[in-house]
Image 1 (tube, rainbow, N blue to C red):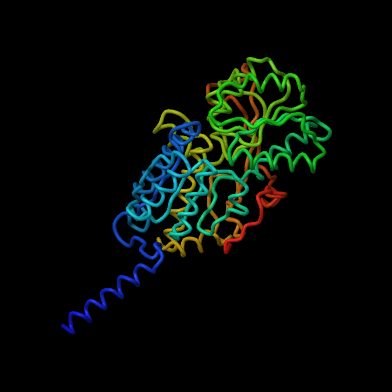
Image 2 (cartoon, rainbow, N blue to C red):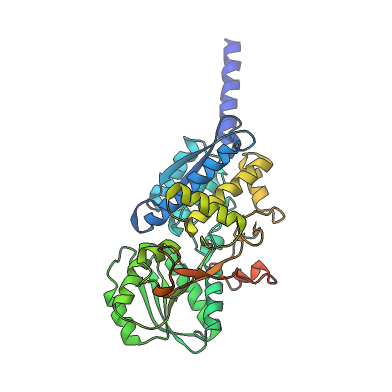
Length: 412
C-alpha cells in the first residue's frame, strides 16, 4: 500500500510539473517538423491567400527535396483562417493537437493579432506574412510574433517619397478611401501623419466597408471634390473593383495608394490599372534568387508569383534557417530570429534582418508604376518596378521613420 501511494504521489507530481511547463517545452524532437499555415482563403482577402498557400507549398516541396531541415522533413498543416475568432481557434488547435513548432501566414491585421496572442501564450513563433498594421509592431506587439510583411509606415514612406518627387504633396488636396477594418484604420492614421508633416491637405476621407463592391457613391464625391490626388487605402478585391470603376467614371486625378498587392493590378486588367503604388516585392525584381523563385512558381502553377507569395515563401526559408541553427524550441527560435546579427537572404539586393525592438523584418521595398496599355508586354507585365527603396547608401531604418501605432514593449 505504501509503495502504491508513493508511486501515485510521484506520478501526480510529474503530471503537475508537466502541466506547468510552457507548451514550447514539448518541441518535436523526431519525425517530421510540423509547421502551421493559417491564412484567409475565402472572402475579400481570399485571392491573396491562395497565392500564399501556393508559395508555402512550393517552399516546403523544395526544402524537402533538398533533404529537409537537419535531415527531417517539413510537414505543413494548412487552414483557412476565415476571421479573427476562427483564426484564434485554429491556431490553438494547431499547437495543442498538431504540435506545430511555429505558425506562418495571415493577411488580416485583426486575425494576426488573435493568432499572435495564442502563439505568445504557447511560446511558439508566429511569422506574419501579410498583415501590415503598425499597431502590430507597436502597442500590440508580441515577443513570439515576427513580421516578414512590411508595415504600413514603410509603404507610406516609400510611396510618399515618390509623390513628393512628383510635386503631389506640398499644398495639394488628397481624397482618401479607406478599408473599414484594422488595416485600413492604421494605414489612414499613417497617411494623415504623413500629410501633417508634409504640408498636404485632405479634400475628403471615406471609410469603405470591406464587402463593398459598388464604389459609385464614393466616386461621385471624389468628382465633386476635385482633388489633386486620389489615394486608396483599400485592400484585397476592393482595390480591383475601385480601379475598374475609377476608369469607368473617367476621373483623371492621379491615383495611388499606401498599400497594394500586384494580384489586384492583374485582376483589374491593363486597361484599368493606373498610378504608382508601393509593394514589398514583384516578379520583376532582378536578382538571381528572385528570378529562380519566379521560374519555379511559374513552372508549377502557370502564372508568376505576386507579393503575398513572396512573403510566405520567404517566411518558410527564414524558419528553415532558424531551425537549422538552433532547433525547434520556441524560446531558442525567438532568440535567433530577433538577433540582428542573423541576416536572411530575401531575394533582394541586400540581406534583411529583424528589428529587435519590434520584430519587423528590415528589408528593401519598391514602387510599381502602371504602363500605358500600348506598352504592356503581356497580362502580367502591366507595370514597371522601381529600384530598391531606400537607395543603397541609405539605412533600411529610414523606412520606419515617424511610424504610428504606439510603442512596442515585449514585457507588457
